[in-house]
Length: 185
Image (cartoon, rainbow, N blue to C red; front, side, top):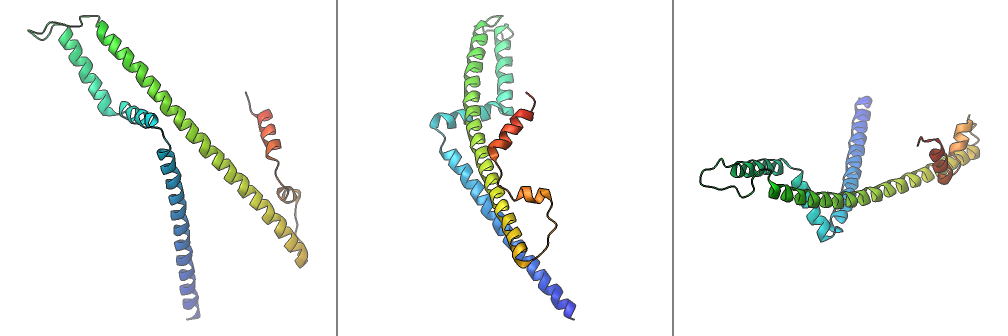
């Protein structure tokens, strides 16, 4: 009977722990959503329009629209429709001009969108680096604290060289320089 009570207590603890974990996950999701909303709201009007156009330009309806448009243009201008004189006969100079202008503007809009996305990705990378550095600093403080507690309690711990090194502050600049020297290219 006693084991039943401990199992019930264990289940309750696991249930509470799962709820706490779910609540933390929901807070994290809300934080991420707020960052995304802030990024969306900080876009200029031109960036917003560029994003909408490039999203549509990369879609299946856009492809189908162009297939229909080019097909109709060619059919109309090779004389296949009786009573409709070609207005842009082969080699379709006007179509070439229109398509070239469209390509130029789409390219510029895609570049605008990519530049904005690169800025946002850089911001996220810097945030990630900052959080990683804070986590590393917290871990270092905790390791130092654990070593002091162990010493105070007289607990003999077999701390190897790696544990001692991990308890020291990390020099980010030294690590970055070492990485630059060892990475190819």
